Image (cartoon, rainbow, N blue to C red; front, top):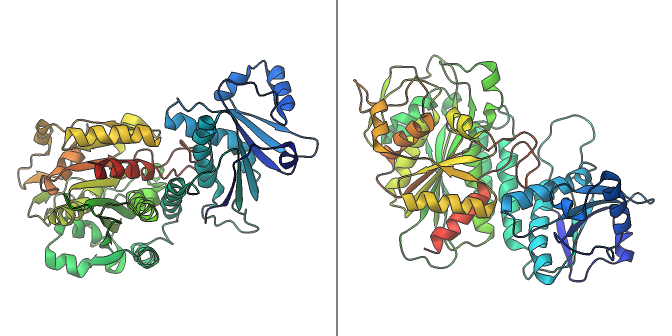
Length: 488
């Protein structure tokens, strides 16, 4: 539940400023702030630190009144890129949010355009960081932010887009932080059904028995390590509001590995930590679907979630097996820890059979993408150059930065197998993010396809707008991209 928003068109006066216990002042990059209530305290701190007022655009400060009111001061430049604006506002709010306030006041200053630009970003950042993700500590729990008061600008729709994105981001993070003993494939499927009923999505489940009849051998190879045949590919449908006659639906595909041990090629403990996050791609797809629904986006969406675990067991798949995927491709298993591309192969095949206008998949797929980019950006690969370019621009606008990598055919040589149509991966690990995408490209039936490898799904200390280690990266990117695709 996001904080209740109350908006005031007029600027914050001294009477209301004195009643706010936690207050954020969002200033223009260059302005005379002398008439802003409380500025004398901020000016004194700047003098003591040897800072100029314009440096608040890089380093926010916090002041405190004699009455105990904490005020954050930050300079907001709408000409900066979205990532920098969101990150700066998060840093400004962080000292206030650490006290878990019940109410946060935001005062935007400057001309009408400046106030409008700053208000939307500030409200979004407050919503994203005001929620409390699941915690399992005993004792008293911190309460979420209950109310946000915005002074200096009033929106026409209560910031419907920002609210939808904050809800989607929060859903993605909340699902991802669930421990693996609580979010199993079975319990995850139950949660998805509840979400579908609440949101009006049509839901269909391809369980192990049904997938066996369909001969989805790639997914089922991994699913053999899941308990009690709990694995499934879940299909959700959002009909879209309004008409979009050309091109059909857009398919979203998410990797939903609820825990990844690596299988028989067992991960070391250091790399197995946080492997409950390996379902993050499916959580992002769900968060994106929720945001689109809240916004009544005029795009039909087909969502396919590949939900399983990758465990050790006598039944679990092994190296050198040859399995047949749903589309008939035979695959030589080279490494059991490359399970994500296996479950996605059959999910992508199911998605492609519906002949969508485009397919977008989200997955925490390869360690090599994290090596290439670290945890502050994610990588994309596409079988259409224009789709990759749209994704990069969408990421820039959304504040979730992505880098496009090549998808050249000659990389396929590394996946040549002497006993099957394709190797699942190589053991060398070189360019595995590209090889994984080349492997997945075999299962999209030449439909326009974008793969998002979520190396920024977890970033220590937060990333962009999100202050939690689990970032929800991909929801804003995805919505921005869907809007661009809908516009043609």
